[in-house]
Structures are given as C-alpha cells and as structure tokens.
Length: 127
Image (cartoon, rainbow, N blue to C red; front, side, top):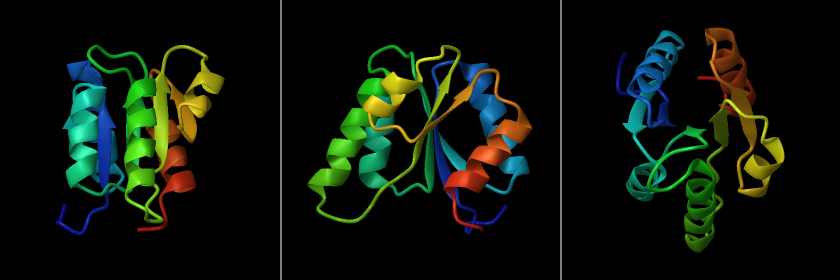
C-alpha cells in the first residue's frame, strides 16, 4: 500500500480490536494511524489530517465522547472548512449521545468487514 492511501485514525483502547480494524482498513485500501485513547487521538488530529476517525466510545483517560467534542472544538478553532467524519464504534446503543458529542455515525461492535466497508463508502469520497 503506497503513501497515497487515504489515512484513517482508529481510536480504540483494546489491542485486539485496534489490530482487527487496521487489518480491515488495509484490506479495503486504507492506511491508518492508531490511538489508544481520546487524549492520544486529539494529539494526532492536531498534527495530521485524516479522511475519517473511527472512535471507541468507552475508553480510559478521555472517552470517545469527550474526544469527539474536543476534536470539533479544535476544528472550529482553526476557522477552516475542515471537517473530519467521526464514526463511533460501540457495543452500547447510545446513538444520541454520540451525535450530541459531534460524531456523525456509529457502528456496533463487533465490527464486520461489511459494516466497515459500508461506513467508509458513506463517509469517504471515492479513492
């Protein structure tokens, strides 16, 4: 996979689920950066542009909901039209809380390859 692959940020505190998401993304033609919690995700977003962020909701240090709010504040503070879609990855049906935090969509765990592909098709322009 070349450097021209679209870059996705995967934010997940569980090593196995991070690895699985990375493999799924690679099989669909996407490169990814990994973050273990929302605080690390916020640091990465401040220095790198992503076509999409896949965000676990329940994590230590900074939850996915808190991270999504912080990312939206960061984007608003840049006074640009930059807007990165954020998709929640969750085991709990807390859709409204995700939307209220600034997330755009959600996927229920465990995330299948088909579910991942559908989300990418919905939110990332053809690559």
